[in-house]
Structure formats: C-alpha cells, structure tokens
View (tube, one colour):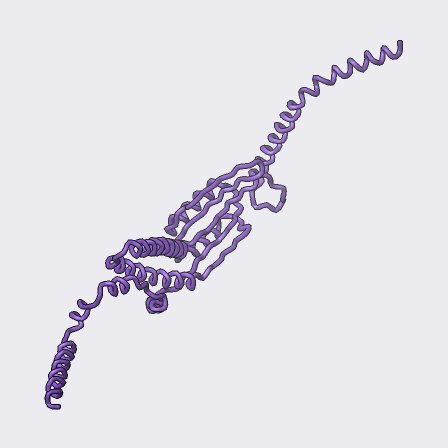
Length: 281
C-alpha cells in the first residue's frame, strides 16, 4: 500500500504544477499558441448594421432648417429692352445671376424668359423689386419646400456608410484568402458608389437652399385691341401699322403661290369654247 501511495502523490504534484503554469500565461502568449485558422475566420466577420444604427444620430441635432424657395412671375411691359436693363440692375443689386435666358419675337408679341438664381436671403427683395414699377404683373406664384427631413435622413445614412467603409478597409488589410479579398473589395466599391450619390444629393439640396430660383417672363404685346391698355397710343398705332403691313405681305405671297391655277384657267376656258362650238355644228 505504501508503494502505491508514493507514485500517486508524485503524479498529483506534477499536475498541480502544470495547471499553475498555464494560469500564469499572458493573453498575448495564449493568442500566439492559438491555431492560425481561427485568425482568418475572425478577420472576415462583417460589421452588423445594428451596431451603427445610432452612431450619427448626435450629429443631426446641428442640422438647421432647409427651405427651398421657388417662384414664377409674368410681367407685361411696354419696352422689352428697357425692362431688360432694369432686370439686369435689380439682379446686380441683389447679388443674383442669370442661369438661363431665352428671347422670342413673333408677329403678335415679344417674350423674354429669364431664369434667375438669387441668394436665399435676397429672394423676397428681388421679387418685390420686379413687382414695383416694371410693368403690369400678370401672374405670380411663390412656393416654399421644407426638405429638412430628407436632408437629415441622407446625412445619417451617409455617416453610417462612411463608418462601414473604414471597417471594410481595415478588414481588407487582414484578409488572407483571395475569396475574402474579392468580397471585401466589392463591398467597398458599392459603398463608395452609394457615398458619392448621397454626397451629390446633399450638394444639390444645399445649392437649392442657398440659392432660390425665380423664373421671370417679360411680355410685350404688339397688337393692342383694348382701349384701356396702359401702353401709349403711339406705340399701339405703330404696332397696328406693322401688323397691317405683315397681313398684306402674307396675303400677297399667298396669291403668288396660286400662280399654277392662273395659268390653268385660260386653258380650261379655251377647251370649253371649242367643245361648245363643236356641239353647235
């Protein structure tokens, strides 16, 4: 019995010493002893959307109101050139600029359509300047669109996408297999495209918010049939003379265009007379 007890005691002491040695090892040393396959599996774990759902919510509190203001105005004037000069002066005074300009001249009227971009704070002053003293305002339509909610939503999604992108780039550095590298690169490419679209949308909204748009149409009627027109008699008389001359020219050209029929009439008359004479004989 004594011979059996001594070997058991030795085995017990050896086992205790081994457990103590394992317990004293550092986490770093334990990680180095771990199999390499575990490291590869840990490198390709993709970030969960739930982990970033509220990352950028704190940044949205700083977003101010985003209001887009647009307007359409149609003004009847007595002189298009004079009105155009007044428009240029008003645009200059309000630090605005012309985005598009189109002029049309017909037999009945002249139209000058101008698309104006003006700083948001000067929009109301610009509209009032056109309404006072330039001519008779035929129509005016002003609208405001609150896009704060859309801007906030796009900003949150953009911030989260940028965080995802950084995580994928870090994962790409530690990827081991070709399959993992290609999969991560495809995710990075898709995220970069989505980020470009979101940033473009935010730039577009900022541009529309910072600079309001006014579509201004200047209108001059050439023929004045109304006795209560605000245009002077001399201008109306000149327009009527011009319109009469244009009508005469149009009629004369229309008659000239019928010359084949004038040549055909004598031939028809001649044939009819011959047929009549034969019938009498």
